[in-house]
Image (cartoon, rainbow, N blue to C red; front, side, top):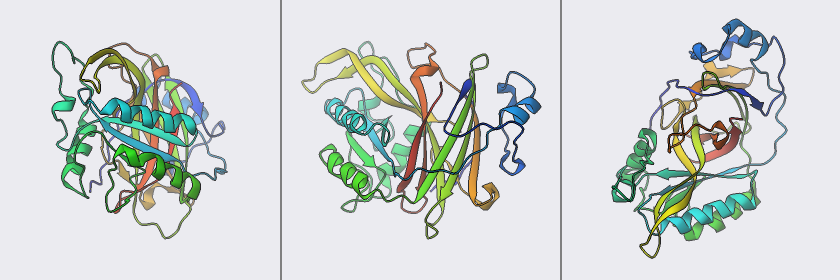
Length: 309
């Protein structure tokens, strides 16, 4: 499993799930952020915009559905509709990331084919994740398949869509909260730069090594999709598109004692918010999903959504 770390790029305006307090700064949590993305003196950011977190009162364990899909996969639209239905039924607890990847990373379902399928929905981290799971930890046979908090159910992590509802509803009912996450994001339109601050609280002392990952998600894009009757739909709405990981690391960072501030981990990122896949820029159509997972079993213990705007 990968234990890696880098920093990337992001966007502006303040949005977060924590209180903002002036002149609060925790040197322990400072990492190699790209300070040029802040349109001003970095000392002003540290003094006035670096957040502090109040106690996390959340009691719910959330769920991440990773939908492995492709724009030429005829059964994938039905799976995507199911994932979106599960999200809309529990919008504050169930989140979706649609990864355009197959067991070999990129297969025929994900390839660009002109003129009908001109958009490349893949990205290096999604391809890396698909390639890894294609041959490791039980693998997955093809698209559409999905993971529900990467829970190992029936000896496999990747589930057929017909199992997604039952697993999701069971996990919602069990509500076994072992990790809490909070986040705060500052976005700056003039540089397209963002600074994401996260706090992770381990509630179960028996947990092993944990990793943290931040997915960039594009909410929707009208584009081409092959449908179940083999027809070509040029007006299909692709939802919750996985655009990569904000730090360029498919499997994120391992939480280490050096990240502790008191008894909670603080992990910070800088990144640039990308253009949409159609080339336009709309930060409102982007958000990030932050999740913490078990480095041995892959199970995701918590996930939260953080808007850009």
